[in-house]
Image 1 (cartoon, rainbow, N blue to C red):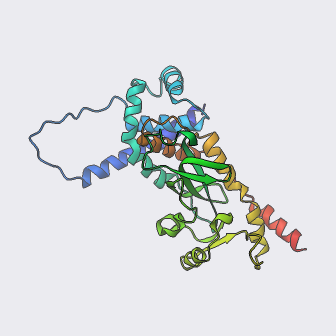
Image 2 (tube, rainbow, N blue to C red):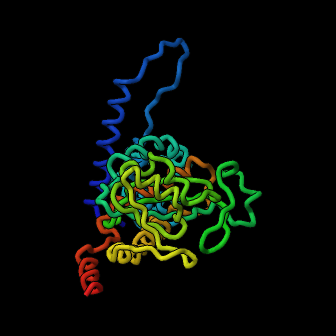
Image 3 (cartoon, one colour):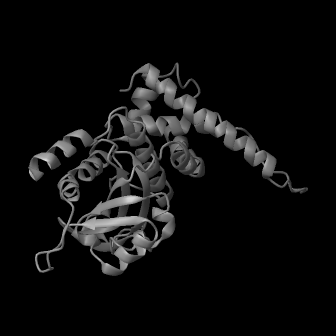
Length: 303
């Protein structure tokens, strides 16, 4: 469980953003005059509280949301959340926070590019591969794909991070999508500059030239059947440090719990994913690289 100061900090960040978002929407929205009476009763729990609870759930390594909500929130954190609703109602209200949660992630939780970035993809399984035809929640969205550990049925999460372990951007694609496809969209890498390190799955001469025009130098380890090309010693060292992004994927799955096969709707899957990414972005300590150590390794190797 997070400290009380951290809980207060997260709620204040989320609540300030929600108030700012609501004020902008009220100013820009067009009021429609209608004689039809609509129910417009305010929720017992605010959207700020719902988003905060989801972030807290994904920050503490919890696995079952129902146990966390009924035990930790309704018993031990009643001073922070005095007007809680039933668990079934809480699950229904989650999907109403998708837009605010996505904008909060893009506005407050995305790091800044430093010129050194890493890219990778990881599978998010919707169900066991043998039950792919029985799954109705992800029908038309998920697909059968293959990764380094075998076949899976679900979607792929593509992420870009800097050497500090901060998220720079992310994208969700069906499981059968090639890892190089997201980089063909400029919106995915428009904030990236400098060198982008990837594995052998990103090798493509056309993609290299396209990214180079946009100011991104794609660096990958060559395959065994490829001709040897000159590579800067520092780039070789950074390629060896690609375990950084693997560590980030591991924390997203095992600590933030962005992957499980118990989803009952696609909307709640998106809420689960977004809140997990936000929770990781708000971690005080993230996996990172020490640039000074890398520079020392380069000097030792050069000597």
